[in-house]
Length: 488
Ligand code: GLN
Image 1 (cartoon, rainbow, N blue to C red):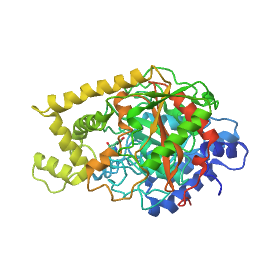
Image 2: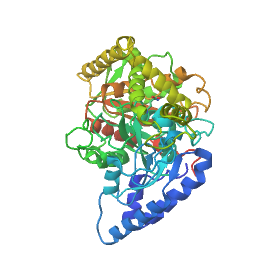
Image 3: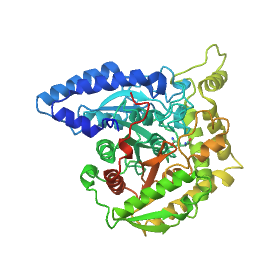
């Protein structure tokens, strides 16, 4: 086997041993990102000058014996829907063309405070609406395991960048699976924290009651570092939780003995899932059992309503959130218009892509008088039932194990003509967002040569248990250390 790709931890060791400088690491990432861009479209843009200057500053800090955090001097990437001072933020949309942010998202500020160095902004589905990173003005991102396939979405650029070794860690956002699904399809670890664990200040809103920022890397241990850096209360986000942030890295002791893993009956049915994906996930669960975990069947009876519920609530919130792109304040404005109404109309027609328009129309419909009770209110009621399903299940187990996705990475172009099929890629991931609970996807094997992810769902604010199980699994397996064909 070829050498595994660098992790945050291995880069940290190289810095500490004096084997590399932060400038070396950042230059290496920038060079690989540039070289892979035409093949993978992982980035919306690179931040060459800023990153170089920050790397030099980190080297100077280290030379003087100071260190801000374990992430100090290490390169990371940011999804193009989190703002960074002086950097373009486009959400891969034409409507935000030319927008340069005057301020930074809390997560970006916190990463910078920890000394991490954002080297670029990653490609995504427009406004994070999608499961394949095909709805992007930058062109479809591609899967480093097979370039004809999607890396997943909407954080597909972050997933592809980490999977191909362009950068060791990245931020993503997850409204219905957009961190976990691309992590699964690209063979990396992706963690969506509890709703409110990480501040959404400076994250461009898609569906505000579901959106959550999270982390992607090769290992659970690297994810623990990243999460520790970005998590915690923020007075600028009223939904952020006041609870203190645990030292996630310190709870990774490789021990899962005695932990009870729930296996939801409704997620282990043969229907609608690739049998090889299912058997790979079952084998991963057995590996955890050999490590000492206890298995128990649980039930999440309202699962079959989750996708419908999600697509009602997410589109309703999106239609409201996206009303602000009117050509007045940000980005694109249609030229040669005669009056305000025409400006709104043409700006939005020209600026939004087809999928975003579809969501706005759907969301406006489900919120409109006469349909509100039948769709939106009903969806809110079912959301409560889904949340209760998890509360009930967690009475009998410490974490829940499921496949992350029903199939491995699909071919680019194979689902764009049929949005409903695309929406079904999210069957296993949307419930965690509706319930507000944390979820992680960890590489657990391969089917037809493509990565498969094991999803672990946890109790509210119990990211530590998910990271602990994922870390123990990685200590016993080496799926995460395999290198994709397309890694430069
Ligand atoms: N694929 C889902 C959607 O299209 C989830 C997106 C996300 O989590 N941002 O809405």
